[in-house]
Image (cartoon, rainbow, N blue to C red):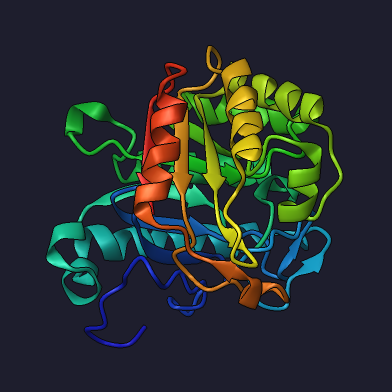
Length: 287
């Protein structure tokens, strides 16, 4: 990292730390510093979202995880943040709070076969640093940011139960309310009933929020019918999930469609949020 260069919400460069698996960001949705864990170091994912900021994205799954290296990187970085001068050198004053550890990175985290073992390492280190003890006043969240595509797999659901026990929560991607919309935005062919089923399975195992990115494509905003279909979907799971994170395009896409995408205004996103809230779901907006 460059000396005295503040992190900001417009730059989530996974290479900023110079480490293999661990990277810091200032997250607008988390509200402070987030330690990212990137298991997909080969830039491989089973989806290809139009707005994805990963360069050279390929279809696939991550290679085996070097668990010892990941543990050493996370331990050293936690020590740097908590006991070193990381915050003063790289984070603006108003954001100097460690909010979470987030599985995000350059592909779908749960596609890593070692994901359950990585969870155990994270729990071990958070206990080592006292970050899961609410009595110490700085209990942090462990967040999984996922497309939810593997939530019907036994090992993934078992991991969701484990995540729940370590103050975890899931942010589950749902970017449209129709299979046609999902195909257009996420470049995968899946049905809405299958999304709802996996979303409910996930929410039964761990506190879960829906996260939704909305963008204009070729200058066209999502239509009223598309918004209505989306709201119909989230309404079907409103008794299962904890809320919705609605956000816009904060960083440039690295996909071939990048020039076709336009950031949507905060006012428009807030209008959609009002409609979602009318279903009884708490909704957070990050334009």
